Length: 268
Image (cartoon, helix red, strand yellow):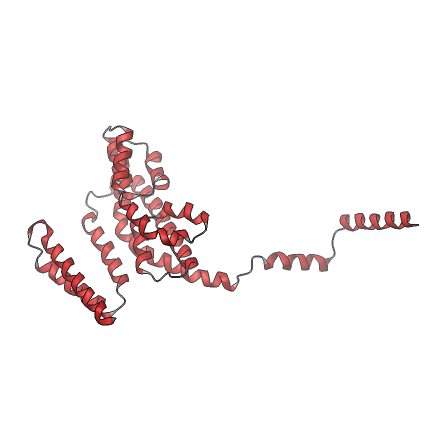
């Protein structure tokens, strides 16, 4: 009898596994699957951080846009295969290093010399790495592998002027800002290669860097004292602009440091 019962139970189990589930079972399974992709409160808290990073980065890319187009023109004029030149935007993702490398290779320099010079140009990233090291140490391992890829001037500057005390917010903001710039850089360097014949020789390169750092300055100003310091230092720089070797700029920096220190003492 026990054998018959066991065989019957086994037969029923096999039949149930073969028989298609009922409508109610389908509904339960569908709801369970959909629940995995629900827009949870965790996702809602992430979205503002990602949006803020993208919104902050887009204005900073505008001054870099002429450089992206100019790089495309340089690829065409250097004689480097277009696809190979454009791929440096994906592989290297560093404007100054890319321009240096393409220029030297186009002039017939040895590859080793071109690579060494490009690495020297980007040596400032060592300082960025030292500054961000404490923030990276508390991040997941996968982030520590991926994040250095998008460590550029703009991303570093934004992480310094934004209040990102929460490690998770820092991680999401950093990656969103970095890959926003990465995407636009790849697109516009490609457009520079395509439209190289019609791109004018002068496309505002001289003022682009100034606009970028002006944008960073405006984002960093959060208090009245900071605004006063910025205005005074700008006035001093303009007043002494006629001096040689940019001495006026050095004077303005020193004065602004003194004013900022006094303001910090007063605030404390």
